[in-house]
Length: 186
Image (cartoon, rainbow, N blue to C red; front, side):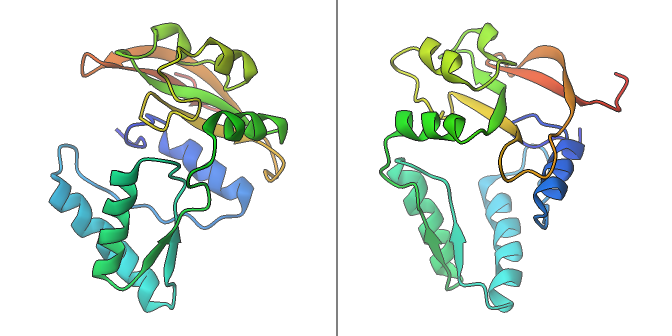
């Protein structure tokens, strides 16, 4: 499969993203259908390595889901680490607009079809996209309404080249837009 869970983005694009940002990439592999206990076990293995190298905090982009924050904090506390949440409590409409104003470029890679129509997947994450969102959909997709892939912006050393591929429905609920690296032929 070689894709990122939930987002559906090909691994090679994630690798390109890390390379152009000059960020180290540590991948964690979870088998398809893994239980939450298996996920937590693998995650804690990775986090212990960081802790053992004097990393004491993990930064998360969570904005307002208190149960998610508590879950993360509980896991980290098990191994003596703590979570940092710099976006916590911020206005998501303002955050989304600021992201765009700063010059970041993203494409919507998956949508929950119970909340958004198929035509939202594969679209640019821009002001037009935000203006078309139904009132019950968070502008940052904080409730899992949609996910995206950031491919350019002021901190990128170069734009990640891709083309949009097939749109598919999976699990009878989520639409995914395949992003093909420009060098890919399929």
